[in-house]
Length: 109
Image (tube, rainbow, N blue to C red; front, side, top):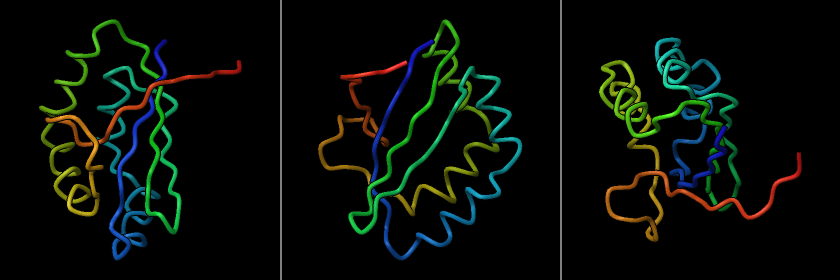
């Protein structure tokens, strides 16, 4: 299992809608994540900074292939089209990244 953390900003004017969408996430999007070996997925929001922290556990053996399957899924792409404009990627992210990955520096089991 691989633990993964990532960060992104959220536009303040979209907080209520983002919360509403994620309180009732589309079932097909959740199923695609599960099919791609993503488990224990959480998103946290820090206000007033409007920074979100995402955490998930990857239980597969080919993250690149599983990520590609998520990105190719039409329902997931529709979800991203709704949620993406609400998000504010960090200026420090690498080219091609949306959510900026983080390095785990400590873990207590």
